[in-house]
Amino acid sequence: MNRRSERRGTAERLLIVGNGMASVKLCEELAGRAADRFAVTVIGAEPRAGYNRVLLSALLSEDIAEADIALRDEDWYRAHGFRLMTGRRIDALDLSARVATLSDGAEIAFDRVVLATGSTPLRLPVPGMSLTGVKTFRDLADLPALREAARQQRRVAVIGGGLLGIEAACGLAKCGALVTLVHVMDRLMERQLDARAAFFLKRAIERKGVRVRLNAQTAAVAGGTEVEGLVLSDGERLVADLVVVAIGVRPNVALAQAAGMGVGRGVLVDDELNAGAPFVYAIGECAEHRGAVYGLVEPAYDQARVLARRLAGDQGARYEGAALATNLKVSGVPVFSAGEFAGGPGAETIALEDRALGIRKSLTLRGDRLVGAALVGEADDALWYRDLIRSGASVAPFRESLIFGRAFCGFDSEFVVKEAA
Image (tube, rainbow, N blue to C red; front, side, top):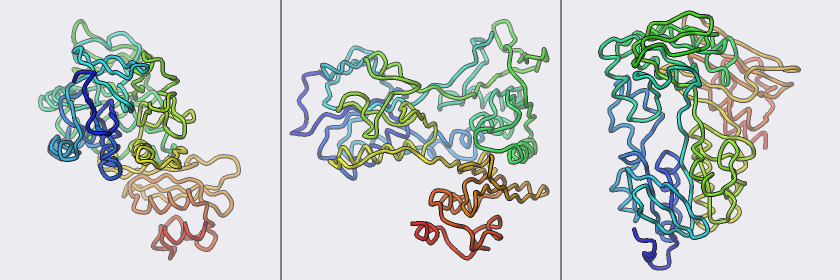
């Protein structure tokens, strides 16, 4: 598009950089609130419309089809008057001229711009990371090599015991690969689970055919031009034909930084989600708000809703951060954590375990208030516990039954939140 292109009618030109889950949610919210206010252009680097990355592991293990991860297709964008450009990348933003330059030299003029550029996968700073056979697990382009390795029953080392690493390991094992999961910490998902809950998760993963190595630091990837193994810091060598690095992500801030925007770990935004200038915004995994960078879908969706309200004219809309709760299925195993799940000084922990069923529940209380929870193997009451934690409601009337769940306490989450108010 030529930079001198006329805007449609009196609509402002809104450029959304990125077509991941935060971007899609913003478009959905704008379609319902302010579609007539803006001539929207969405630029996505991947060659297809945005999709649900959360379901990549299920796609890897062939529990779902590729069509199942779709969010909004190109017809949806056209129906709402949005211009979607896939397989295109913006190389530069000139904020003073309000012009974006694409990698092919084309220019797009804008009145407002939203950065939803997401994150890029991390690789360890150790020898061998550039060898053929070292892969990440982040988008659709990563799946063919992983599926082929599983089909051939190859030996795979997965580095990283967070959600993404566990999902990759279990998906590969289910498809036939011989998988070892290597994690530098003493327990899996250490940011979401206490030691005992993590132990139950480890047992569940091992039952799925994954060998788990904890306290194992990767020193190098061995091989000439192709991967031959993984070398640990204690000198042990694990034989491997493929290495999958799933140690986390880094906010994609290069475009913002080059444009002179404020950058910490992510693109710095205020409560209005402005990134420095009043016509520049950032949401999702690339944004840093009040010192926090969220790598989860729920905060990204909340930011998209707030920004859509502001763009629709609601100047009272503010994003005030997220009280995070993790509620998901890790390769089929229900996992939930929220609040002070690890306890601490002055806290009391109530726990219930059933090793035969693989269930571990722990609740953290301060006085008569629930302040944290960690559940593995059964999480039917997860949202109820989350509401109790967020509301600060007293649990004194049903404290003795709290660990057994909502059905044993006689109250639903809606009642509890209203009581707390």
